[in-house]
Length: 271
Image (cartoon, rainbow, N blue to C red; front, side):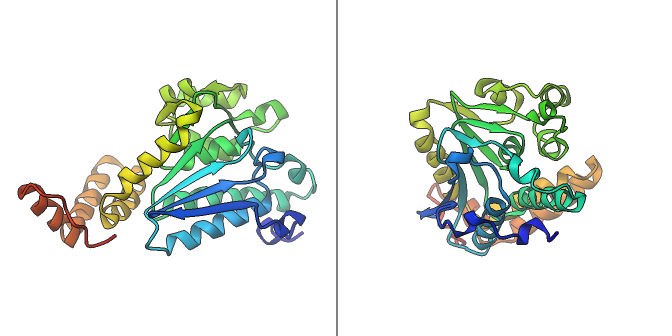
């Protein structure tokens, strides 16, 4: 069987599978499979990954928001699709496709904010954990529930364990139980919990605050943040020092410092 990322499903004919709206340098990507709780089908992952690749090359986009239509943010992998084949190669390729999508979010030049309203389970929770920042409504809930189906969420565990303390991550993985938005904030999975009616505005306000900063500094800094996490302390400081020196050589850094000294608003060269 061919790799999942090249498979053509009936839903690929649906131009509304993933919605994109660009405004003021902010790209909002909306998962639009509400009837399937926005499950990450092969085509959904393909569309999302391709769109992120396009955005990565688009210098006019400063921040990305991932939102969803319907009652769920994302219910994880499409279970019917998972059971559509007994072949291990098919499942291996599908989970690798998911892993590539999550890594694309990390390596994207622009910061990515998850705007969560509803449940985020299994790979949906992984998607939230993979984003740089996350906002959630008070009624949202999170789980890595594969264990209840006899399937330990090993790939979601990669992102989850990089956000949550070990014991909290293991409790979620071993029980499959939901946690509230408030617990998710306490555990470090999301940044802020807001009323459902205020979620879109609050998320956009955060995106606007980020988009007002130097695009060059953010791109360099995001890449450095994730790179240094994989190093020991000494190597991380050596690498980070080199990155800061590189950043200091930029026009934006010189402009930012001069503007601070002169008590004026900086005029970034890289917008």
